[in-house]
Image (cartoon, rainbow, N blue to C red):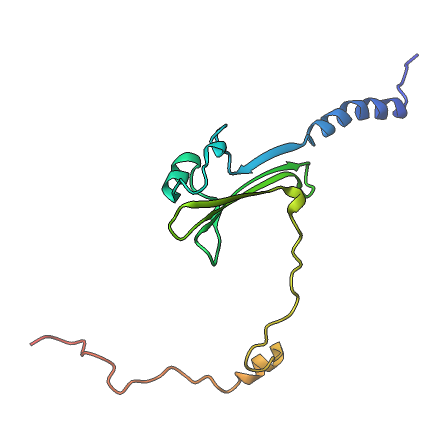
Length: 164
């Protein structure tokens, strides 16, 4: 007598093999981006004694410089966690703001963390433009009759026959 395996048992066995493989493929990835100072280098910054060149030599060039004030430098570091295809989650964000005086000396150091950040709302206004809005049909019909045949020049160019 031939013995058969019920379909439910086969489904459970396939599920028991496929589920761990699927879960292992969705492991989270932690990504560190931005400024990464060498240990102890930030503590060596001294206010009123170091110039811009000294700061660059000590901790490196800034992540960005303020748009309207070149005396404000920002060093930005972020740590994000990615999980499969979902939106990444921000785990940690550190921003160090260095302010320089007019003489180019380090004036102050401010540090900001993720708790200090704020979401920025996008403005949904539309900038008006000159002219009028026309539909696709108006564009097509507006060009009817504007096209002419190829332009005929009275002097088409140099003669094609012979030289001297």
